[in-house]
Image 1 (spheres, rainbow, N blue to C red):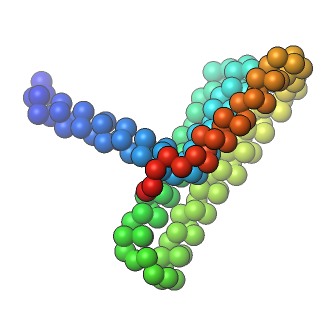
Image 2: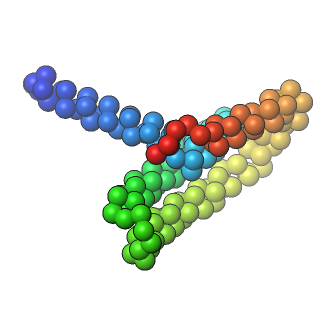
Length: 156
């Protein structure tokens, strides 16, 4: 059986990870963009009834993109600790890590296209939004998503 000290260490690890997620969410605009997009993707998945396998795939690509963006943010912060002056090597490191996020995001868009454009799924989504009330609620959510994304939640 594990001691309370070992359990505390595990709980400290989860606490630090949760703090890191919140820190990224409230200090990094691009992380908020990905979270907002993930929220819409999950909603569209539910409306389109993509099923358990579809949601598993959706969860994987959401985790891939948000995880890549968080790693990119961490790499950028490490680089900024190294120097604030122009350095070709730092630029290359930042460009490579942001390129990795772009690759993940492009793959996620391709997967989403496959998940959401099947005739039955797309039909369900279009039928759902043919109801003016649901369409109005969806359109009204967009300004809130933009506020969430672009609000200055605090400095890095």
